[in-house]
Length: 330
Image (cartoon, rainbow, N blue to C red):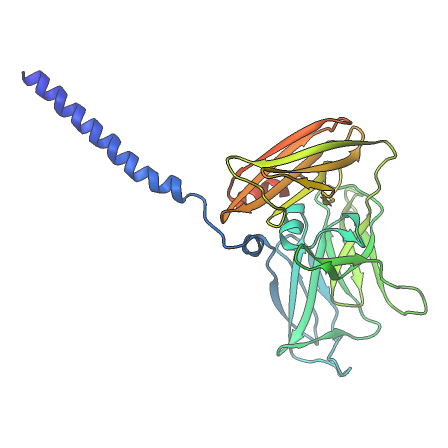
């Protein structure tokens, strides 16, 4: 009887322990994923945040951004809106959009008038003093040396960023600046070669204006293309509209982001007609906000003409999801 009582006591303790563990774990599981009021709030969480540096206008300054870009401002090169020389402390604001997750969630996609670009790394720079804008004097430029991190892609030219046609999804439209002799404008890309390795270790952005800057070239696909279908759905949820969903194609070879278009929508999913180069590996990325929760999915494959592919979105942590996208390219 004593043994039976002992076994019963042990069983009761084990059951209580399991019950306690179950109660403790349930809240963790239910609260693991946060809720978000809008998709814009997710973009606000994941967007690249500006950094601010103070320099003396008389001596200029040199400093590094969070992603390794070196910014260089020449001495006595700044003026105010009336053309008067600026003295004293000046605040420099910079942001770096090096990877595709940075570009997507910051709304600075590499697009020029609807045409995708291959980016060497986007930057933004602005200057102010006591809340008033500060400009470069005529004949002066600033420089930003963007690290290449082993990338050997060639052919980059200077693109300047201006307000995009759709500020919600892409706030910047990249364009070639007018730098002919008559304009007097200066904006170019100057690759920097490491004397020891004889390899380009950074791209020098040189401009006479503080603005969005991007070493780019137009994304050109080969003549051999394949067309296929990509259907996006969610696990146990309905994609009733595209308003809260975004979908992109990421070429595995170059640093570009292509927005997927030509969609048809049903009660449960969205189907895109996609075109990509023959024998190219493509990373399909999609995410949506459903019932105030973030769902995402990534599918990587080499498309076959006429094939039908499916990507199921599941609830994920948006910060980790952005990290997955950034990991696709150097």
